Length: 515
Image (cartoon, rainbow, N blue to C red; front, side, top):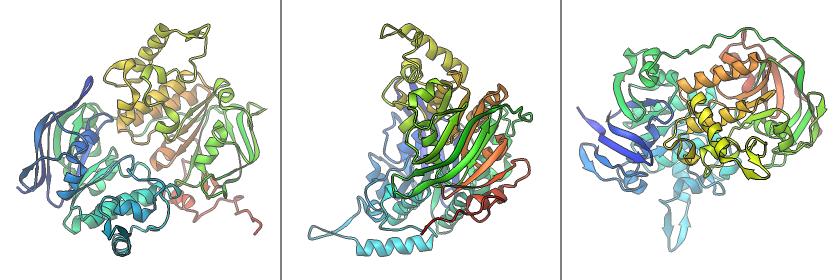
């Protein structure tokens, strides 16, 4: 049997936790090998060991049958190993072209030569249908585009062992389909792929074999064609998982949020990112704003939560005009926010878990007395939330949040926002990058909040999530609402057409803007 990669008996430890516990992974040449596991199961850690970002305590790595030592990513690149990371490793104020050649630049007499590189990159982008703009600045392009840049970085270096770490977490259904085609094309050209994902549909669509990790241990490797999604999910979480959560019809209450003619200018290009948006949200419903990334959903939510100021229009909460109210006022009057970027707006990464769980409530009397923090009460609060929300971390409440897995960081945010006893929850990509067990848990939480008479405003790119838990869907395209649809009657394909701007609902004709 010809294995292109063999990771034998790999052990990697961090303070208080064994991330990889004696794991063996064998990847055949020319296959798409999926790596499946819950958040914190050790998948990204294992791949970071292979890519030279971490040094294992024990174990050996063989590439094409030869034992190797990989001290850093340059060693990995030299062996033909490339990696697209879950959180992209790009320099935001460099161009696409500069990012792709970074580290393997052609220099002549001390001058950077980019002409040959540009020609090669343009050819590669055509060959693999990875449309990019070489001179665009990274911070100005969408996340889907940034991912194409990461893939082109690997192809530019002629890597033939490609690691994709959660590559579809930030993509639309159409972009995911495109990525699957690209992966199959890469395999046809003799490359081998390791594909880390939580999404069982994707594994069924492209992978040949799948290896499953659970809590840092290796569970087994199976042929995808002969294994059902239910069997894979049970291997992954150690129990049966409910994919479609039963929910009763909503019991609608009064309007809690009224948005009228809201407009927000984009900080990137100064044009209107949100253009005259109006809608109502009632108590007891889950209203979803669906759309392809970069169509104004982010700016809409920032304006509703107070992170940025609206340029026009009004926001009423429980009948009160809160358009210009500060963030703390909104937080303390019953608005909870599960943010899109958990690292940027959800957590202080170098604080402990206990500190992060009281970020918006530390000033309440139960957590402080005359300006002094009550550490006992803060610790008790953290331990209760850890138990109730199954937040896993190496050292419990005193764990520094940066060291926790993405899924457990997300659970901490959900716990904090739900336990504030809000009247309205704004949940943006609440299950991004989570495994099926954690997704099921968060969906149940949101439906439970709805059934308690609270209002949930959900923003999601996941069509299965949009259709699975929403009571009503608004579709956003180029800063405008282009349709209101019923999740019970619309298909994924039709919703995709609305999201791509190919279709508009009655009453949502494009506004005429003055030239």
